[in-house]
Image 1 (cartoon, rainbow, N blue to C red):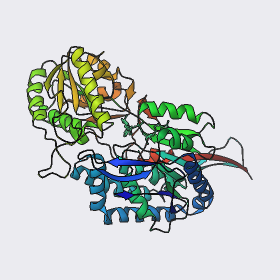
Image 2: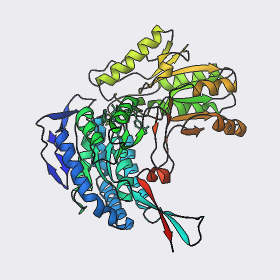
Image 3: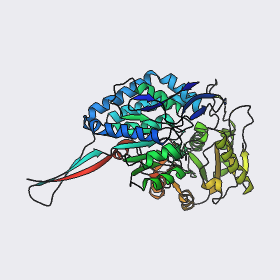
Length: 477
Ligand code: NAD
């Protein structure tokens, strides 16, 4: 079993805590690695290193900073198979999908490197003669990046790449469930001549080490990807120093299938979306509203497609469609929601229970009907391969049901009528909407949730801006 150490100020160092976090392969139950269960002192040391390094890092030309991102991309590509296997082992992600995540992450570093010569300040018209108003864009400073377990490698890059490119330094905390790929990356980073303290990786519990990262006066910005509950705790903790927060939180994405939709596209899109990574994806369809005139036909196709979904070990051949849930707690949470839904009157057409496997925390792909809008299964994030289907009669009804939600991350519509598309884009209240496809965002877009799904966002030009603050100069001459 491999042990990792904190990566602080350019070196691997022992944690001040003597406790460890054991990382389990969810499919086999085997403990594959251990990482430090770091404490507040680890957090403080990492932040001090990041703080000390920040001014000199920001003083380098952006193109020079971008050079490091390109080299990170190259290192990831050179180790792509090892990294994908590590990712598949620590979180039960089927190997091809783990490979997509690793390759996409390399591209993501390259993508943000490309912004070095593109982002710019502004010259603003003045009301006074002989005056120039300049708006400079400056790095926010020291960033604390806090990651979830579902896309640990990609979300790490989603924080590290824009932070470093803009001249911020960063302390990154992976989830305690999936820290291994991040620490493998730290070992690659250690081979670069990156200035000490620019990029630090520390592991530990959210409520201790994580909380210290958020409450320290050395932290200028916290970027969290995680649950609404963690986001709320971080908002409260950030109040002490009025620290900037950027939060990407949970979702409850509706998929609306209109009467004129191409049913094969809709069925494939929603099934793929619901079972990818065993349903543990923030922006994937969590509930579907289907027009009553096509409901029965849709249901036949949908039930067959969900019944055909295969689950198994991520390394199995032929490759299954999905694998185990991340841990027993997640499996139990999904099951409790399905039990509650049945109690509330839902009917199970496919699945509806934990899978009967000797190892792992599998949950059967599940289709629920006879659901009502007020049920927990329709309102709360499931984060598993379970989908409630609800019929609707009128356009307005579908939109109202979709918008009736405390989350506002993503949504999707399936229709062949361009007017319906444009009207729905006007009426839906979500940060992202997919039309006739399911749920994957591009690195050049802007992934940002409304309502409880977050504050701020990631990717593209607007994601870069999160890491910049303005300074306006009034220059009389
Ligand atoms: P989580 O909230 O349990 O943990 C996320 C991270 O926050 C972990 O590293 C955890 O240790 C840390 N943390 C928890 N409480 C903290 C605190 N008080 N202070 C500091 N750090 C703290 O989330 P998770 O279970 O790892 O991830 C799943 C959730 O993430 C789902 O709700 C999912 O929808 C969401 N998610 C959202 C996006 C997005 O882009 N919006 C992407 C991926 C996942």
